Image (cartoon, rainbow, N blue to C red):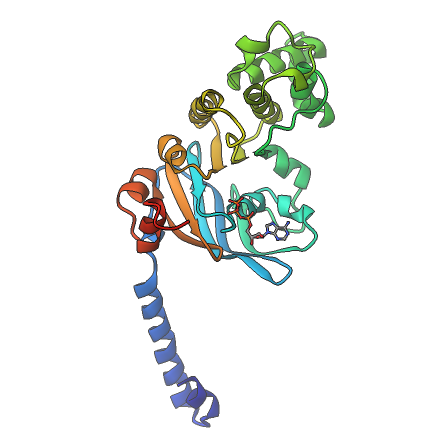
Length: 306
Ligand SMILES: Nc1ncnc2c1ncn2[C@@H]1O[C@H](COP(=O)(O)OP(=O)(O)OP(=O)(O)O)[C@@H](O)[C@H]1O
């Protein structure tokens, strides 16, 4: 039909056929639209992703990803190795910009602002959308300096101003901030008497919670976590999981995990990526695990592949 449209000289037939084409394609899109597209959640989306595609050179790593991530909740990204979970996570605060061969197309909005717009402020974006990596990466500095580093570097004027209005000096304000962030990261009780010690002397689980405290110190709204517990033992993992659940009372957490039990335990919604860089299912975590809409997702979750 497309050929006849382009070869006809009759304008009316051409427009009629185009309408039929358009309707057919709209109908077939409606029929093939995955059911998870109907997923709706309480509250506002903090991140809205539309038609996101990512290439590394010729390798098409993410294909037409559209998803909204709700505020103050945990969203888990699961799927087999190489399906694009980390790539997707890095798109949410433009960390892929640091990879020379990465090319990103599509829209990512953070609170309604396009983060890929020319005018986007990357420093501000990465403060508001912080990241915690798979392997804890504290600076080889004291525990205190690790937490205070971001606010010092960014010269947090508001905090300085608030401190002066409260009659505090900056040292007092910094002490308060360091304590609050370490408490929020469930680490204060373990380190309060050794804040001047080098952070590299902490255990792996403590280092990871310190990295979370460091992330909290610059006042983020979203925390992206790329397999934050995969290098930790079961006890340290349980502490990180408890922490993630409590952080979601105030922050929006997006976590990549290979551990399906972990996703089922701690997340409110789950997005399943499958090989080829497709987002195959997204919805309420209980529903995705107990009653997946797609056979491929069911096969993945029940361990038939992946
Ligand atoms: N820096 C890079 N340069 C080139 N290709 C990359 C790069 N990072 C990822 N890729 C490719 O993009 C695809 C998706 O990788 P990505 O790491 O996002 O997947 P993943 O689902 O997070 O995998 P895993 O679970 O193993 O960490 C893979 O084919 C990978 O080889």
